[in-house]
Length: 81
Image (cartoon, rainbow, N blue to C red; front, side, top):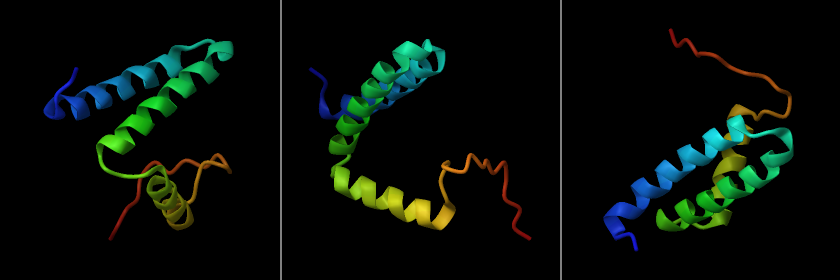
């Protein structure tokens, strides 16, 4: 059982591991790998003291401010004079 000090680093490491698995997974396995990421994110959300509703609200706010990937646009950098 992980102690309080160990939980957050362990979840972040697990998130990295699962992201690598999505990147290397065969197309048929990607849904399962995404489900694993979803579980890790849910645990990380709770460990940080947030609710899923708060995360959804923050995502909607960022989406409204910065856009999303729906149009498949990618911003490499922003130059501020």
